[in-house]
Length: 317
Image 1 (tube, one colour):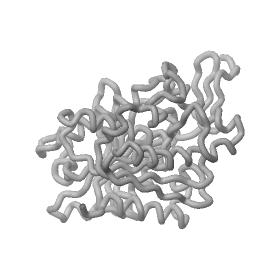
Image 2: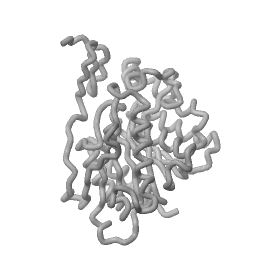
Image 3: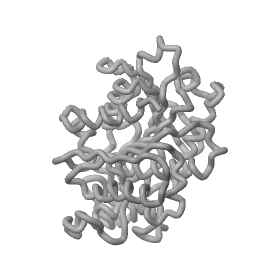
Image 4: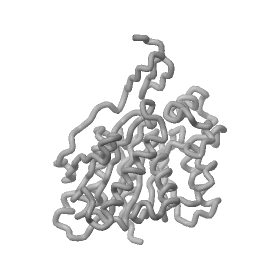
Protein backbone atom coordinates (compact mmCIF):
# COMPACT_ATOMS: atom_id res chain seq x y z
CA UNK A 1 0.00 0.00 0.00
CA UNK A 2 1.42 3.34 -1.08
CA UNK A 3 1.03 6.49 0.98
CA UNK A 4 1.97 8.74 -1.92
CA UNK A 5 -0.83 11.18 -2.57
CA UNK A 6 -1.96 11.88 -6.12
CA UNK A 7 -4.57 14.48 -5.18
CA UNK A 8 -5.18 16.05 -1.78
CA UNK A 9 -8.53 17.78 -1.39
CA UNK A 10 -8.53 17.78 2.41
CA UNK A 11 -10.57 18.07 4.51
CA UNK A 12 -12.93 16.17 2.20
CA UNK A 13 -11.02 13.52 0.22
CA UNK A 14 -7.57 12.20 -0.65
CA UNK A 15 -6.64 10.14 -3.70
CA UNK A 16 -3.49 8.01 -3.47
CA UNK A 17 -1.22 7.07 -6.34
CA UNK A 18 -2.08 3.39 -5.92
CA UNK A 19 -5.72 4.27 -6.61
CA UNK A 20 -6.86 4.16 -3.00
CA UNK A 21 -9.56 6.66 -2.05
CA UNK A 22 -9.83 8.09 1.45
CA UNK A 23 -12.98 10.01 2.24
CA UNK A 24 -12.36 12.30 5.18
CA UNK A 25 -15.91 13.64 5.52
CA UNK A 26 -19.49 12.67 4.81
CA UNK A 27 -19.11 9.00 5.73
CA UNK A 28 -21.57 8.95 8.65
CA UNK A 29 -25.12 7.80 7.98
CA UNK A 30 -28.32 7.88 10.02
CA UNK A 31 -31.32 5.62 9.57
CA UNK A 32 -34.66 6.70 8.17
CA UNK A 33 -37.11 7.18 11.02
CA UNK A 34 -39.85 9.30 12.53
CA UNK A 35 -38.14 12.46 13.75
CA UNK A 36 -39.63 13.35 17.15
CA UNK A 37 -38.63 17.03 16.92
CA UNK A 38 -40.31 17.81 13.60
CA UNK A 39 -42.87 15.04 13.21
CA UNK A 40 -41.40 14.19 9.81
CA UNK A 41 -41.22 10.54 8.82
CA UNK A 42 -38.62 9.23 6.39
CA UNK A 43 -38.11 6.02 4.46
CA UNK A 44 -35.50 4.74 2.01
CA UNK A 45 -36.28 3.39 -1.44
CA UNK A 46 -34.25 1.83 -4.25
CA UNK A 47 -34.80 3.51 -7.61
CA UNK A 48 -32.51 1.29 -9.70
CA UNK A 49 -30.93 -1.82 -8.20
CA UNK A 50 -28.62 -2.22 -11.19
CA UNK A 51 -26.84 1.10 -10.66
CA UNK A 52 -27.53 1.48 -6.96
CA UNK A 53 -29.53 4.70 -7.27
CA UNK A 54 -31.63 5.23 -4.17
CA UNK A 55 -33.39 8.01 -2.31
CA UNK A 56 -34.69 9.00 1.10
CA UNK A 57 -38.29 10.21 1.16
CA UNK A 58 -39.61 12.65 3.77
CA UNK A 59 -43.26 13.06 4.71
CA UNK A 60 -44.55 15.52 7.32
CA UNK A 61 -47.00 14.10 9.83
CA UNK A 62 -49.54 16.75 8.80
CA UNK A 63 -49.85 15.08 5.39
CA UNK A 64 -51.47 12.00 6.90
CA UNK A 65 -54.65 13.83 7.86
CA UNK A 66 -54.75 16.19 4.88
CA UNK A 67 -56.54 15.15 1.68
CA UNK A 68 -54.81 17.91 -0.28
CA UNK A 69 -51.55 16.89 -1.93
CA UNK A 70 -48.35 18.71 -1.01
CA UNK A 71 -45.61 20.32 -3.11
CA UNK A 72 -42.73 17.97 -3.93
CA UNK A 73 -39.08 18.93 -3.51
CA UNK A 74 -36.38 16.83 -5.19
CA UNK A 75 -33.12 17.45 -3.33
CA UNK A 76 -29.56 16.78 -4.52
CA UNK A 77 -26.90 16.68 -1.80
CA UNK A 78 -23.55 18.43 -2.07
CA UNK A 79 -20.01 17.26 -1.38
CA UNK A 80 -18.02 18.09 -4.48
CA UNK A 81 -19.59 15.15 -6.35
CA UNK A 82 -17.38 12.87 -4.25
CA UNK A 83 -18.40 12.86 -0.56
CA UNK A 84 -21.62 12.84 1.50
CA UNK A 85 -24.80 10.87 0.78
CA UNK A 86 -28.54 11.34 1.05
CA UNK A 87 -28.27 9.45 4.36
CA UNK A 88 -25.77 11.81 5.97
CA UNK A 89 -26.86 13.41 9.28
CA UNK A 90 -26.20 16.84 7.74
CA UNK A 91 -28.82 16.32 5.07
CA UNK A 92 -31.19 14.20 7.11
CA UNK A 93 -31.46 16.86 9.81
CA UNK A 94 -31.79 19.72 7.34
CA UNK A 95 -34.48 18.05 5.25
CA UNK A 96 -36.48 17.11 8.34
CA UNK A 97 -36.50 20.82 9.20
CA UNK A 98 -37.36 21.91 5.66
CA UNK A 99 -40.11 19.32 5.18
CA UNK A 100 -41.68 20.34 8.48
CA UNK A 101 -41.34 24.09 7.98
CA UNK A 102 -42.67 24.01 4.41
CA UNK A 103 -45.16 21.15 4.78
CA UNK A 104 -43.79 19.42 1.68
CA UNK A 105 -42.83 15.96 0.49
CA UNK A 106 -39.09 15.56 -0.17
CA UNK A 107 -37.19 13.08 -2.33
CA UNK A 108 -33.48 13.24 -1.47
CA UNK A 109 -31.50 11.58 -4.25
CA UNK A 110 -28.49 9.37 -3.54
CA UNK A 111 -26.42 9.33 -6.73
CA UNK A 112 -23.16 7.56 -7.53
CA UNK A 113 -20.08 9.56 -6.59
CA UNK A 114 -16.76 10.36 -8.17
CA UNK A 115 -14.00 9.38 -8.57
CA UNK A 116 -15.20 5.75 -8.72
CA UNK A 117 -18.09 6.90 -10.89
CA UNK A 118 -17.01 10.05 -12.76
CA UNK A 119 -19.46 12.47 -14.27
CA UNK A 120 -21.88 12.21 -15.97
CA UNK A 121 -22.83 9.38 -13.54
CA UNK A 122 -24.27 11.78 -10.94
CA UNK A 123 -26.22 13.65 -13.63
CA UNK A 124 -27.51 10.46 -15.22
CA UNK A 125 -28.51 9.01 -11.83
CA UNK A 126 -30.31 12.22 -10.90
CA UNK A 127 -32.16 12.20 -14.21
CA UNK A 128 -33.16 8.57 -13.62
CA UNK A 129 -34.49 9.62 -10.21
CA UNK A 130 -36.57 12.35 -11.85
CA UNK A 131 -38.06 9.86 -14.29
CA UNK A 132 -38.88 7.66 -11.31
CA UNK A 133 -40.63 10.65 -9.70
CA UNK A 134 -42.51 11.25 -12.95
CA UNK A 135 -43.78 7.66 -12.93
CA UNK A 136 -46.13 8.76 -10.13
CA UNK A 137 -47.87 11.35 -12.34
CA UNK A 138 -51.10 9.32 -12.54
CA UNK A 139 -50.94 8.08 -8.96
CA UNK A 140 -49.74 4.63 -10.02
CA UNK A 141 -46.02 4.82 -9.23
CA UNK A 142 -44.05 2.44 -7.00
CA UNK A 143 -44.13 4.72 -3.93
CA UNK A 144 -47.46 5.01 -2.15
CA UNK A 145 -46.09 8.03 -0.29
CA UNK A 146 -45.75 9.93 -3.55
CA UNK A 147 -48.95 8.54 -5.07
CA UNK A 148 -51.01 9.67 -2.09
CA UNK A 149 -49.26 12.86 -1.02
CA UNK A 150 -47.15 14.52 -3.75
CA UNK A 151 -48.56 17.12 -6.11
CA UNK A 152 -46.63 16.65 -9.36
CA UNK A 153 -47.94 19.96 -10.65
CA UNK A 154 -45.90 21.69 -7.93
CA UNK A 155 -42.39 20.28 -8.15
CA UNK A 156 -39.18 22.01 -7.09
CA UNK A 157 -35.51 21.07 -7.33
CA UNK A 158 -32.93 22.11 -4.76
CA UNK A 159 -29.36 21.34 -3.87
CA UNK A 160 -26.30 22.79 -2.23
CA UNK A 161 -22.78 23.14 -3.64
CA UNK A 162 -22.32 20.30 -6.17
CA UNK A 163 -25.99 19.48 -5.55
CA UNK A 164 -26.86 23.02 -6.65
CA UNK A 165 -24.94 22.36 -9.83
CA UNK A 166 -26.92 19.14 -10.33
CA UNK A 167 -30.25 20.91 -9.68
CA UNK A 168 -29.34 23.46 -12.37
CA UNK A 169 -28.34 20.78 -14.89
CA UNK A 170 -31.53 18.83 -14.19
CA UNK A 171 -33.62 21.97 -14.78
CA UNK A 172 -31.86 22.43 -18.12
CA UNK A 173 -32.58 18.80 -19.04
CA UNK A 174 -36.19 19.27 -18.00
CA UNK A 175 -36.45 22.29 -20.26
CA UNK A 176 -35.03 20.32 -23.17
CA UNK A 177 -37.11 17.17 -22.55
CA UNK A 178 -40.64 18.23 -21.75
CA UNK A 179 -42.19 14.91 -22.77
CA UNK A 180 -39.76 12.70 -20.87
CA UNK A 181 -40.63 13.74 -17.32
CA UNK A 182 -44.31 14.25 -16.62
CA UNK A 183 -44.41 16.78 -13.84
CA UNK A 184 -44.44 20.57 -13.64
CA UNK A 185 -41.23 22.12 -12.40
CA UNK A 186 -42.12 25.41 -10.73
CA UNK A 187 -38.75 26.51 -9.39
CA UNK A 188 -35.22 25.63 -8.34
CA UNK A 189 -33.26 26.58 -5.23
CA UNK A 190 -29.49 26.72 -5.70
CA UNK A 191 -27.70 26.97 -2.35
CA UNK A 192 -24.05 28.03 -2.69
CA UNK A 193 -24.03 26.40 -6.14
CA UNK A 194 -20.75 24.96 -7.40
CA UNK A 195 -20.12 26.87 -10.60
CA UNK A 196 -16.66 27.86 -11.76
CA UNK A 197 -14.79 29.34 -14.71
CA UNK A 198 -11.40 29.62 -16.31
CA UNK A 199 -10.99 33.26 -15.32
CA UNK A 200 -11.71 34.67 -11.83
CA UNK A 201 -14.63 37.07 -11.55
CA UNK A 202 -15.25 39.70 -8.89
CA UNK A 203 -14.00 38.82 -5.42
CA UNK A 204 -12.67 35.44 -6.57
CA UNK A 205 -9.43 37.25 -7.35
CA UNK A 206 -9.07 38.00 -3.63
CA UNK A 207 -8.69 34.30 -2.83
CA UNK A 208 -5.16 32.93 -3.10
CA UNK A 209 -4.21 30.55 -5.88
CA UNK A 210 -4.27 27.53 -3.54
CA UNK A 211 -7.88 28.20 -2.57
CA UNK A 212 -8.92 28.56 -6.20
CA UNK A 213 -6.97 25.43 -7.13
CA UNK A 214 -8.66 23.51 -4.30
CA UNK A 215 -12.10 24.66 -5.43
CA UNK A 216 -11.45 23.72 -9.05
CA UNK A 217 -9.88 20.43 -8.02
CA UNK A 218 -13.22 18.83 -7.28
CA UNK A 219 -14.38 19.47 -10.82
CA UNK A 220 -11.25 17.93 -12.32
CA UNK A 221 -11.59 14.93 -10.00
CA UNK A 222 -15.27 14.45 -10.75
CA UNK A 223 -15.07 14.98 -14.51
CA UNK A 224 -11.68 13.83 -15.86
CA UNK A 225 -12.93 14.09 -19.45
CA UNK A 226 -13.88 17.75 -19.05
CA UNK A 227 -12.70 20.45 -21.44
CA UNK A 228 -11.79 22.53 -18.38
CA UNK A 229 -13.40 25.18 -16.20
CA UNK A 230 -15.31 26.69 -19.12
CA UNK A 231 -17.12 23.39 -19.64
CA UNK A 232 -20.85 24.28 -19.85
CA UNK A 233 -21.55 21.81 -17.04
CA UNK A 234 -19.55 23.88 -14.55
CA UNK A 235 -19.77 27.32 -16.20
CA UNK A 236 -23.38 28.23 -17.12
CA UNK A 237 -22.15 31.19 -19.15
CA UNK A 238 -20.86 28.72 -21.74
CA UNK A 239 -24.09 26.74 -21.98
CA UNK A 240 -26.06 27.60 -25.15
CA UNK A 241 -29.12 25.97 -23.54
CA UNK A 242 -29.19 28.20 -20.44
CA UNK A 243 -32.27 29.96 -21.74
CA UNK A 244 -34.10 26.61 -21.81
CA UNK A 245 -34.07 26.36 -18.02
CA UNK A 246 -37.29 24.45 -17.44
CA UNK A 247 -38.83 26.34 -14.54
CA UNK A 248 -40.50 29.65 -13.75
CA UNK A 249 -38.62 30.82 -10.66
CA UNK A 250 -35.08 30.61 -9.30
CA UNK A 251 -33.72 31.33 -5.83
CA UNK A 252 -29.95 31.47 -5.41
CA UNK A 253 -28.54 31.51 -1.88
CA UNK A 254 -24.97 32.76 -1.41
CA UNK A 255 -22.69 33.33 1.59
CA UNK A 256 -20.50 36.40 1.97
CA UNK A 257 -17.22 34.55 2.65
CA UNK A 258 -17.80 31.71 0.18
CA UNK A 259 -15.36 31.38 -2.72
CA UNK A 260 -18.22 30.55 -5.13
CA UNK A 261 -20.38 33.51 -4.06
CA UNK A 262 -19.63 35.54 -7.20
CA UNK A 263 -20.81 32.67 -9.39
CA UNK A 264 -24.19 32.73 -7.68
CA UNK A 265 -24.66 36.42 -8.39
CA UNK A 266 -23.35 35.96 -11.93
CA UNK A 267 -25.90 33.20 -12.54
CA UNK A 268 -28.67 35.72 -11.85
CA UNK A 269 -27.04 38.23 -14.22
CA UNK A 270 -26.79 35.62 -16.95
CA UNK A 271 -30.44 34.60 -16.71
CA UNK A 272 -31.52 38.23 -16.88
CA UNK A 273 -29.13 39.01 -19.71
CA UNK A 274 -30.33 36.20 -21.99
CA UNK A 275 -33.97 37.06 -21.40
CA UNK A 276 -34.87 33.71 -19.86
CA UNK A 277 -38.29 35.04 -18.87
CA UNK A 278 -38.67 33.74 -15.33
CA UNK A 279 -37.94 35.44 -12.02
CA UNK A 280 -34.61 35.05 -10.24
CA UNK A 281 -33.48 36.39 -6.88
CA UNK A 282 -30.37 36.10 -4.71
CA UNK A 283 -30.24 35.92 -0.92
CA UNK A 284 -26.87 36.58 0.72
CA UNK A 285 -25.93 35.48 4.24
CA UNK A 286 -23.58 38.11 5.65
CA UNK A 287 -20.54 36.85 7.54
CA UNK A 288 -21.09 33.21 6.57
CA UNK A 289 -19.14 30.61 4.62
CA UNK A 290 -19.95 27.67 2.36
CA UNK A 291 -22.86 25.44 3.56
CA UNK A 292 -22.88 27.14 6.98
CA UNK A 293 -26.58 26.28 7.37
CA UNK A 294 -25.88 22.54 7.42
CA UNK A 295 -23.24 22.80 10.12
CA UNK A 296 -25.03 25.39 12.24
CA UNK A 297 -28.75 25.09 11.46
CA UNK A 298 -29.86 27.02 14.56
CA UNK A 299 -27.92 30.23 13.83
CA UNK A 300 -29.87 33.33 12.83
CA UNK A 301 -28.69 33.28 9.21
CA UNK A 302 -29.58 29.59 8.82
CA UNK A 303 -33.06 30.18 10.23
CA UNK A 304 -33.55 33.17 7.91
CA UNK A 305 -32.45 31.06 4.94
CA UNK A 306 -34.77 28.21 5.95
CA UNK A 307 -37.64 30.70 6.11
CA UNK A 308 -36.73 32.09 2.69
CA UNK A 309 -36.47 28.70 1.00
CA UNK A 310 -39.73 27.61 2.61
CA UNK A 311 -41.62 30.70 1.46
CA UNK A 312 -40.16 30.32 -2.03
CA UNK A 313 -41.57 26.79 -2.27
CA UNK A 314 -44.94 27.48 -0.69
CA UNK A 315 -45.67 30.83 -2.38
CA UNK A 316 -48.95 30.80 -4.22
CA UNK A 317 -48.74 31.60 -7.96
